[in-house]
Length: 416
Image (cartoon, rainbow, N blue to C red; front, side, top):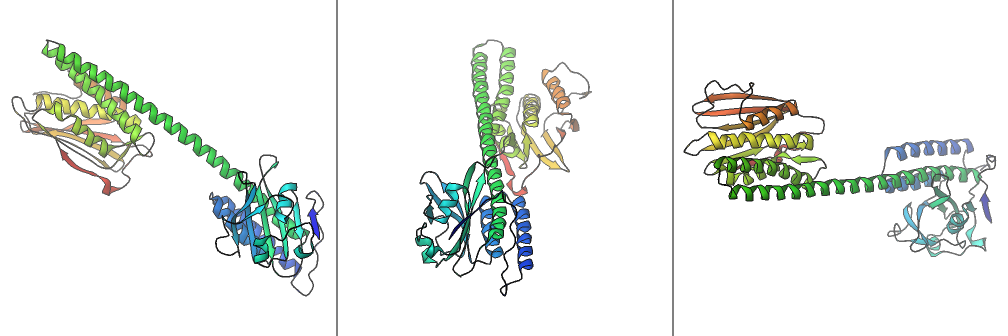
């Protein structure tokens, strides 16, 4: 006989199962299982895990060997079994039930009501569905899984079945409805997470596209500066245009790495340094430029000024370290105790006598360097300045989210 439950009615009186089990112990067990599922549903954001756990606990709570969580598939207008216990292999994600009133699950879904049927063989309104007949199901209880702010829409149906004679009652339906309510909340959270992820992915795409467009625009500026430098007759103007082009190219290179990076808003310093060395090959002339950096994730706020700073130090070494000759220029970057250490060194003639890095100079390059150091709130020192070479050390405190993700990803020294 078909029974539906009015969820607004008072909580029903327990039906005694004399000689079969202790009613109080049975209901306390159901309450304990519902509390366990509440914790599990809060701790996991994987909807499949939540659905599977719901069916396992519902079957246990109703002393039944079969349970299923079904999702309505609007494209085929059927209830697809997404999770369950007791069913034959290949039932999950393959078996489906109609959504019409010809089955207990379909009736519950169509009318939004709990359906209790304790003798499927004697219920004329329901068809003998193959999936139930194959498993010898004699009785079934079905509760719709509601979703939406006001519960006006339905995700699917939560069902418990048994091949053994007996009775599901209204207290069992209340127990099952508690699970269905928690599943509905989990479904809404899952949908909200999906919408949030979609919005994040779209924002990430826009951010990467913006960085890519900035890189392309700056590359056009670099090309125009190079064209203009080749057409001028003044050596000083030519050098000035070339240096300006190198600075703009460095900014473009950072944006290129921001658009291609695996982490939004960050660059891999090791990959950037390798590309930087390759790009500076032409400007280095006969000098040998060697770069090495740990696999450090560096934020855009630090990457842009740091790239310019390295560009200025390397350019200065190329211009002044080996007058009339050539030699090696080394650039390295590594993390130590949450601080990024960048060294730029050469084996040239050293800085002029009386050079003071803390005093303003007429050189545009060093004025830019001092401004970048202030912008980064960092520290630049000269470790050594002798006729056999100069070593600059730049120290930058790393912020949250920056650092070396895996030590074995460091890029090897790359001479160019």
